[in-house]
Amino acid sequence: MANPRLETLRQLLAQNPGDAFIRYGLAMEYVREGDLPAAIAEFRTLLEKHPDYVAAYYHCGQALEKTGDIEGARAVYQAGIDLCTRTGDTHTRSELQTALDMLG
Picture (spheres, rainbow, N blue to C red):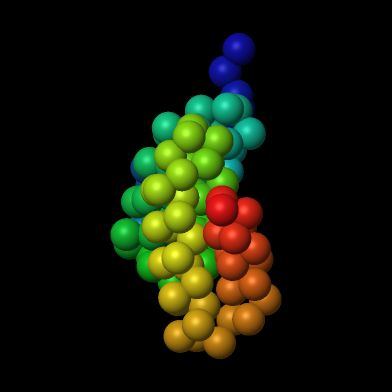
């Protein structure tokens, strides 16, 4: 059975391809559905077009970890940490640093 939220988000994104919030919502819905490759693709597109969307770094890294791409997760977490350091977002930086540290 098709997920109506997923379909709605896809339609909204088709109408507003530059909307970061819709793309983030779509990526998160893919995560909830277990479609991690699709989620990662959406997170990467989001971060390419809106590199200051800090929440996407954490969730993209988490999705990459779940697929076994530890080096990819490490790179995404570090990019997010660098952004948070530049912008002074200490809370998100701390969360990203913890996730990075847990990778070993």
